[in-house]
Image 1: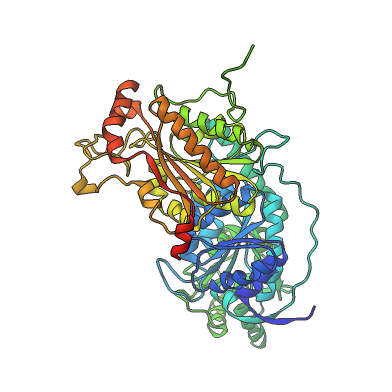
Image 2: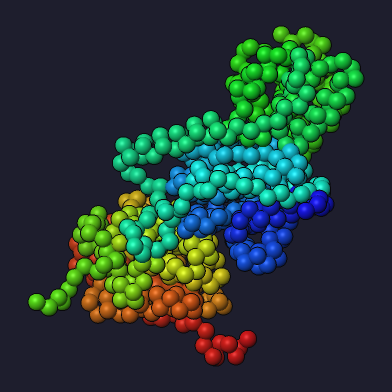
Length: 354
Length: 253
């Protein structure tokens, strides 16, 4: 199949359908309502379920129920809606249920605005809901990559029995790009023999996160922690751009911001300033080893985000005090321009690092 | 020897943690009897709430999910939409259903989700130690209404059957009580009806059980029964509020 021009939100929806994400529950919110609108007509065509639910609070709990019954289920929303889902996501993680949550991030805090932002990094990678849990977090930087990551998101959700969050800024959801839907193959998944599908021929299954005995509750916490450790070992994904050389500046950026950084790097070449980019594709687990390694070959490190500085904390943890780590960010729906990034790189490189 | 009384297969062999005189045990048994009688055990999924019956999954002998506070109707929606062949019921108290879960129950009922709700109304929060519920009676003393529920300050108790039966979407809504054998038999009839409507894929079904909480009411069980009769029955009439679509209602469209 050739490439077709699609809006990010619709392409994400179509990719999810093709990946078998045939149950979708959601609540309208800009800038991702096209996902629900697309699925409202698409799901009946493929024998799937589209249902508009009364609130995002309820949506996350509908996901819990459907996932607990063994379905491949997903939702999408944008920042304020994702906040409302955090209760359910915590329960889903604790009960070890699979689901996929797409967050087309808009600017905040509060009602904020409807323009792109990366201000939900902390919420996505540090938990967001209550308790000791993590989501696997995937961050596409193009419509094609969003399409490619959806099947992976569903597979990993099932494989780890854990919520997977696909986090794209408003730009990823709203822009149109040519995309191709490529079939992806994954190893067979274990049967969902834990699901509540009726107890015919077996003992009853219980989907639950209540453990009043601290010994048992601690065991659950350690079991979850071991799962996240497996993710750290096996699921780190990133892209390197122009890092095959000694660097004046290592840029770290994800999503739309990474594309701005690539343009900046090309132009900086003309000024004989060697910059390279490390683009995390997984925000959790975070490519900390790779960032440390590349930082050692660079004079300085600069993190660029559409926030006032969130991922930069993880970059600093990765780099430690071995190299100076600087930050540049725009917020409130403002997208950094290549010119701004170039200027900041110039300033820190010419400042000589340390 | 002829067996005249036995544990329903749908109840597990687990002693419950409920207080003496609490009516949860009766309602659990009624649910189990009805599920057995209709032959639904192997395709039933219960949803436990947050509240005294949070551990219901230990007491029934079929699949269960435990829901966040008030969200059982959302969880049931997810299960039923994923697997319409399953028989799904929520088991919820008054704090869970009529306070924090008000939005979820109304919208599930209004969508006509084809699951059954077992609603326990004992006019108080039990698990957290006797606080005022949306269903607490006017003047009733609780730990958070120490001078009695002041209706000028916090409004009147919410009547869920009345509220839900105002929805246009077809459904089965009935209030029953379990404080004497006659009422228990009536409750069993209504509950069976509710599960049958679900089994036959006809409509959303909701049965409210007027219940006692001797511990948090500060009464002996017999006193609690009397209190329910004198205070709750006049305010919460035991009756059917709504039956699924009749020819009459269809003609009204």
